Length: 384
Image (cartoon, rainbow, N blue to C red; front, top):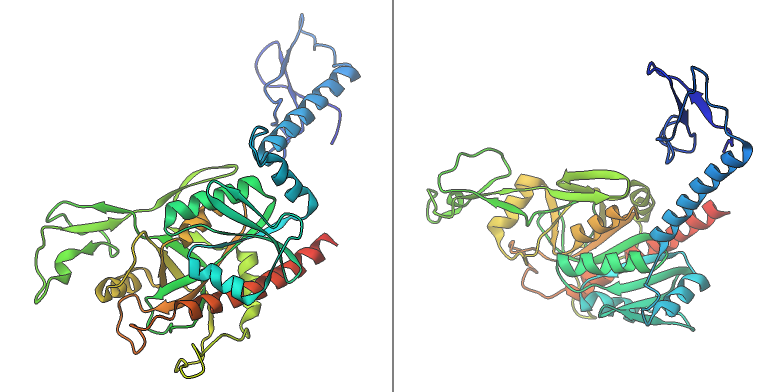
């Protein structure tokens, strides 16, 4: 960083501008870019003395430090867990935030013994959620179960990212399949997810405007026709993120670097048998690059399942992924999703009525754990 100010002139009479070159945005803009020096009797105002330059540098550094402190502030000093959280962040980390939403998904982690709790502070309770501190494959991890649906998921991930030193969010769980080529036990690693539960409900006999509108009359039985419920139009979400203006987005991207790391995990061995006497007819597989759909709806309807796949080409449906990805994007934290297929979301199938939630959760966890190990190696190499 230079300690000299740069002068530039414009066509305004009797005025000299000082451009303070401390911004990464432009060499002619900064936190101090509004400072100006007038001229006196047609002559430039004397250049600032060294102490004045140093003072301005100190002001800039001070502002940057204050900004950093505000961004890294965890719990308020009066919070009863403030000291505990500070110790967690100081003793280890940075951490991978491992997020699941459903009790069966947490049970799979506990049963697997992949997670080794910290011997000093194994957990801390915040806002009714338990944040568990430990390691997986030698990598520092904090895991939390959010509870179901988007509000719970978004709130919990925001607490996680605000409170702890998190370098990446890894989300695993179960999902319904809306893709006839994605079977129970398979694990989807999507590269995009969308929230498909935000609608504009249109007036009766409104004109159709897009292919992604759902017209209820098309699903009348025994024959199609008009329906007083008219149609709905799927709407984008407002994404707020650090250093960017608000964007309206429909598809939320998975972090490409994390996705590329995950793509190396295609040979992960997945569970095929529920018990000693019952096994799936097909060997489960890991599938990459599909799209996922999130809504605060448990989908068990063949017609809507078919519509989602046809209109949006989504292969899995769940109730939390988009909220977890959006919260991570807003905070500038990379995120990846692993969803194991537990049912066919209302579609017909040999095993559609069979509860295979635990197997699906265990398969998604297995891929997530292998990813954490590989990601930990990448971080260690980068730090070295």
